[in-house]
Length: 430
Picture 1 (spheres, rainbow, N blue to C red):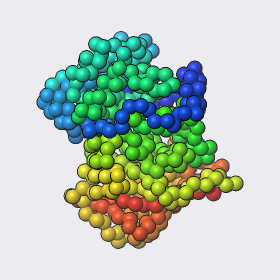
Picture 2 (tube, rainbow, N blue to C red; picture 1 turned 90 degrees about the vertical axis):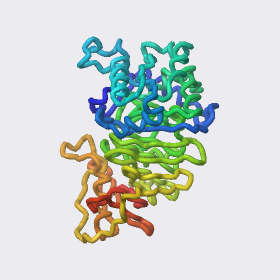
Picture 3 (cartoon, one colour; picture 1 turned 135 degrees about the horizontal axis):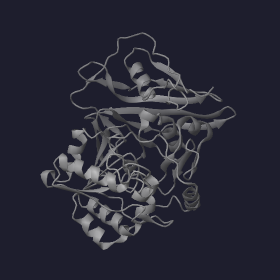
Picture 4 (tube, rainbow, N blue to C red; picture 1 turned 120 degrees about the vertical axis):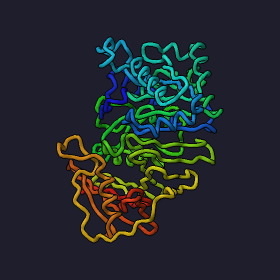
């Protein structure tokens, strides 16, 4: 997906492919761990989508980790439609297919200082290339990799084989490069595919809260679906979601984690990177880079319940990390950047009302980052709690944010809340 184009909010897989996936995910052994190793001493740079072509901070970080001026970046855009499905394939100004996007990103990485950047020609038009030794040689000559956006299921169909999700030769080579210190980066679907088991495949927050989740990739784009065997498994310390605040996906992320038994979600925001050193090891350490942030949703002490009125969740925690903050996964420890100061609120006015906490597509007046807006408004005030609701009803869900003991907010130069640590979230049907 071109960096200059806002990704579609919903991606629908063709019906025949959805059926194939449904059969795939029905396997009762779906939660079995794949055979590849988990330990990766390299690093990841995962962007929540919307990566702008002027984001020198993130592109520079990828190049630095790939060797700086000697960096050789392999660009994989198999999540895009192939040339054969792009009606504008012959127009360089309008095209948005895998080859076209591969050239675009390659030029962008070279503009930011990489010694070389090359499209790796694997897509739905070239599936055999994933097991071509010449492509493996190309991959082995690279020092870093970037996975573009689009539809993450296309990465599964092009780089993994069969219902066992066996690595193709190309993916095995990338995995080996990561294990020997390479950087693997991606944006949107390219970040999502780094997931381990139960990778989200679609859905909107309200329908997720109302109806729950199911294995598969559904023609109904509002239905919360997930792939039990997951993506490539580069990051396994939590679920991953992308475009989170921009599309109001916190609700679906919490519901999926509760349904599938995960106690942590990394909810990635647009144009912002989750940088992971030593992924999959006891030394896994995270840094946030960019203009927005990353929400870490903690469900270790949360309790979900389905009653006559609907589904509810009590006791989840919301930590929102921003530029320069660190996070130690094993210890669940956030570390605000050293240039931020603890915030002491003095405003006692009410928190502004929020009647669309998950930015519904049905609301023509809705605003993105709605949950974050209410959370920061509460942090800036001396009040201890605030409530917000979903736009939809039947039932309407109320989200209650509370400052528990130990909650902290951190500000930058403007003395406004940026980083939030340990805010409590409860969700209940009205």
